[in-house]
Length: 205
Image (cartoon, rainbow, N blue to C red; front, side, top):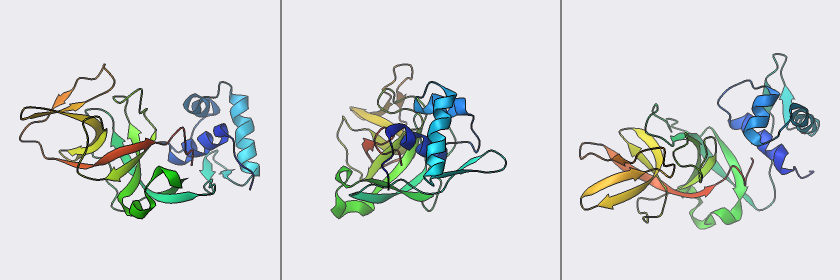
């Protein structure tokens, strides 16, 4: 199988894990970093010819297969994780939507059952995590102060850093346009796991 280039991988990932069913060439280009619709069309044509994509009669692109390389492991993918202070309940899926192949060196293969992938939504963790990035999470309750964690606050999963000051805890954003959020003693919170890798630039599933 011919190796895909980075732009082809990004287009494939965007069309598979995007929020809408239908996109224009300009939409796709803006989200994957290609500056001209014709360049996007050329890449899509190549993906169609290679059997990765098909276009329905209504103009919607459907992903037919994942792109996989050697030394990869398939990790379950669940819903969205909010990078912000608002939003509906996410990670609502009881079962994974699908599995995504990632390079084996990203995880401890002896502990593969404790990894999953989610998709970030919102800009509060920029520039490290952008809205739409795929994020690899390791399920664990413990964390270090510098870690970004997936925390559920009142049934809303969020990706944040946690700061503890005396008996108070705060959810910290990297984007300074977002205020830090103090956790109330009445909040129902628990740590799902720790962010291990931002995959959008790496995996382009």
